[in-house]
Image 1 (cartoon, rainbow, N blue to C red):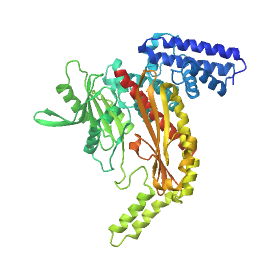
Image 2 (cartoon, rainbow, N blue to C red):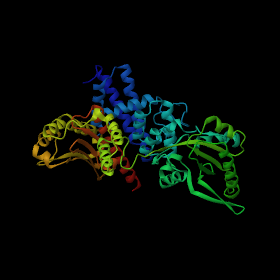
Image 3 (cartoon, helix red, strand yellow):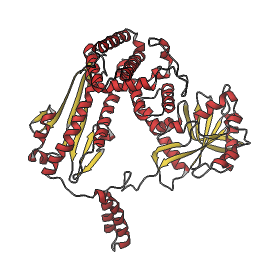
Image 4 (cartoon, helix red, strand yellow):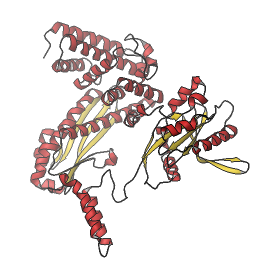
Length: 538
């Protein structure tokens, strides 16, 4: 359905076609910049027409169809992506050059090549739509744009930093850098460190020792370096220095290649104590004397504690002449080996009860009752139904088919990217290639009894823009049935283990369907981005 002013619509459509053609003529090295500029221009036009002409959902859908017809080789002209373009243009109303995470927005002409140097233009479109979805505050979003451009983060690493709350931790360390480092360098040094440090990739019990934390950090060095930040180079743990025939050991030693400084880290299992500062000053004096080379700046000390106590830390550093920072760290505490996961499942607690009963010749009634009390918290999700044919038929109609319909619909966004796309399910008579026939085929008692996992495969073949049919990708989303629950598995996600599990008296909610679709969709995006990077290298 066209808007009331048809001539105005077609004039706008012709104008956008012309701008798109102009963008297509740009050199290959500026493809990403020109693509973002095109998307921004389209988004600005849609936003302006919504305000002035009352464009609505149907008009945007019509625009998407017309742009696809005119430019079949271009990707992302779906209604969903046009709405992202609108949000992109509204979020950055002047397509800014960003000189810092909180820089003022500056005007720029559409065709200007100066945006090649802007952090905004260094990010891919998938970075930007992720930021628009996950970060609503403008200043925080600009911070992640700048950090992503500076550090070359992939989309997954950027999401990890967002979910870890880097914006609220960067530069928050208690330090004396302003009084011990030259004024033109102290702020840069302050921003290198954060508080708290999140070591949630290691799991240790409450009785963990400092050496246990060192072991865990060095065994997970890649993740440790990611949490520390860019430019940290690992020199060693329990790094030995000698003074007057006595040996001293740094818990962890790093070299920061941008600051040109050694970073001595001292790990403490307890809260900060003032005497820790004196020990660190001694360590830094030895580092400057024995490690620092010509051209290096004075070494920096980082004391990592379980808690730091704000005023105590600030007072301890007040009169120190050595640059020292004090921060907290957070680690995960693991549950017993036989009760895994964020919370124990019903089956695990029942197994624990049985274990207690078998191990004790005269079982302690008190301990059994305690475990039974733990089970009471799960009453709202207690087992009410095992798998039956009738129940499975209902699950297929109300949960399975709606989920796969949503997944298949979301994949329309990739139609313009590939020469062909297809999907199929494994049915009782062979492949099922139409979603409309799924329920009819799967709702068969003998077929359901013969299988416990039902397969769905989606294929994308031949990347048009790269001029190759060699790109052949397959993605799986399987439906699994057990005695007491059913679940879903995305291949190559969560180690291909079930990630959403439901009891048989429960149907999938709309929110859970949306979550599964988004996970599947983003897995496809990640794979396409990886393959494009490989094609660039070739």
